[in-house]
Length: 464
Image (cartoon, rainbow, N blue to C red; front, side, top):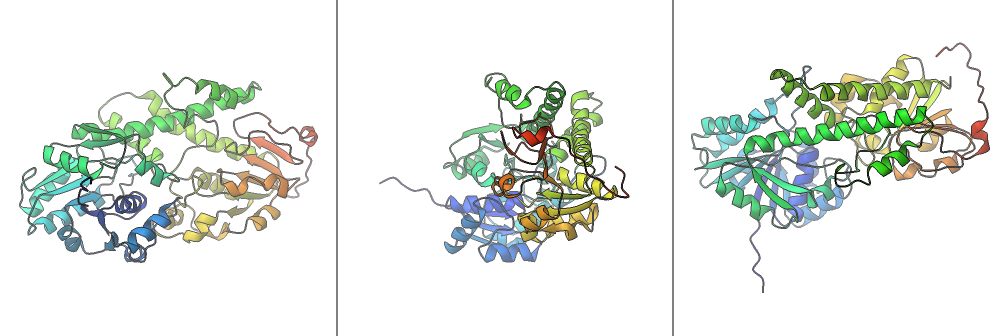
């Protein structure tokens, strides 16, 4: 009989997207996991077997892990450290106005861990899961050594273990990553992580700490660049009456040089908690070191132009009532952070449009935590426009804006004929729709005869 290795005892600091997914997946792999967060409501959710986020498959994983006694949570740092041998730091690293990272949460957790380690026996590994710039690992180690009075790589180790998760598919991505990356200066810690991830079937790459620290920024900046590149190609193709999706489909056939087809799709602007922040951070890092990076510097500008293009497309029909289908930045998630449609809605509201928004995920989450903070800072009254009744939004609107590929939007063309559909994400490949259809960065895909007819609407007292 094959010998089964014992499960490991893990604490995860921060129960947001990265922390919650990591906790649920590691418990699913058989490890004993205790989550730590300053938010009592998040701790309570985990202790009830419920996730702190909306994400595919996460609910069942949390429920199952809780039932098996593998997953719990606490606000007590000392308890978490005493009952674990590995601690993940997965707290937020928001951007400052200048594009630098606010590492206050990281440093605070490092001090708490150091203080808790003071009287704990045994070797303890701290893994930085949060996205941080090079040098952060070293500083975290210094803080822990100062607070604990212990020595790095003798009593404890600090490794960098960046995540490569996409919101909406993060559970799948955690369990099926392209690679597992560890930046470490401790062979003992590296071996512990080899054992931890033994059931994850991906290349295990050990590298220098600073290399591991910068990888997420390089990856996400390239992903942002791919989105912008796809959008710019789409805009050119539309002007020349060329099918941009055929162009990019052929472009993506080259798997040897063009690498990955995932982000190379003409459509809406990128958003979320990673691409905007990490692209800005890499740009700022280059600026701080007097390095000229003209392409990286213009990614965000091009992305902003795509938002402006969406506003012009929505506005050109002269219809006051606009329905937005999807407020979060991506299907299958409730994350509003840097969602590009939020900027579009803000602009439309300023122009006097009547806006109604459908997003069942955002309504379910009731705008708590980081999402609420973002909205209250961005558009405090936006929550009043959000509903989970799709029929109400479409019925009340003349222009319907599709912002993500939720499966429930698949049949809206047959259910709601005669509308003006503005598609920001190429939700359909080809259609035969009795209303008016227009894509953001691709030509007409509507074969219905009415598409060629002119649309005249009289809007009294409005100019756009």
